[in-house]
Image (cartoon, rainbow, N blue to C red; front, side, top):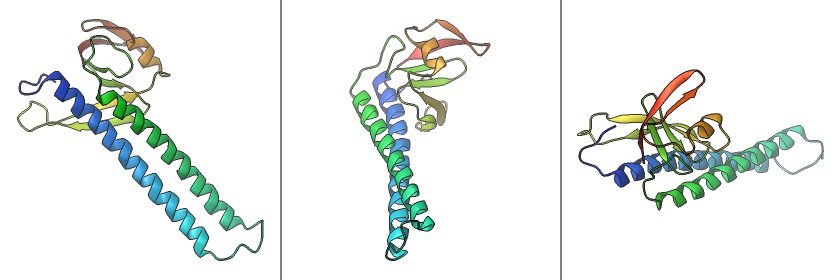
Length: 163
């Protein structure tokens, strides 16, 4: 992902923003589903039986989405804090690590996300994996620098760039 027209900071910001956008989408979906479950429970009518299974199901669904919303919002706060950091020289929390095989964002456990790049750049979009500090691959990458090699799950990866 060698970009000629963008700085390291611009690329880093674009990658973090793509992860933020994905988290915001998750939060919006969780909020919408939570509100829907609450509305369905309200529309069901007055509570006549404390063992009402439909109402209980709707409240459990609402609570599940409320927890997902809370987790997504916590992730958003962490990512917003990382936007202010400058590109890093070593792999640590907040670093974007590009290897010869995969691209990692050492931050929150948000999973796979796509980062669109301008059409003038060599690759129009790239896949990144936002991983938390609890994952084994995070531990393997932590503290490493450009040129270092890790072996994870029997696969050798060399760090090409850290942002």
